[in-house]
Amino acid sequence: RNKWDFLMFLILETIAMLVTGVITSI
Image 1 (cartoon, rainbow, N blue to C red):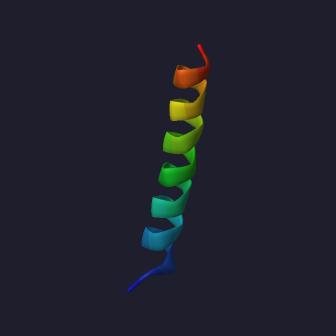
Image 2: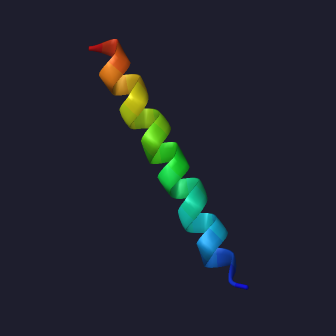
């Protein structure tokens, strides 16, 4: 398969963690 699927998954995971961190800090 493509590496892009894994790359997109990693990027989405990082964004999700950042969003969760921002929401909890508010």
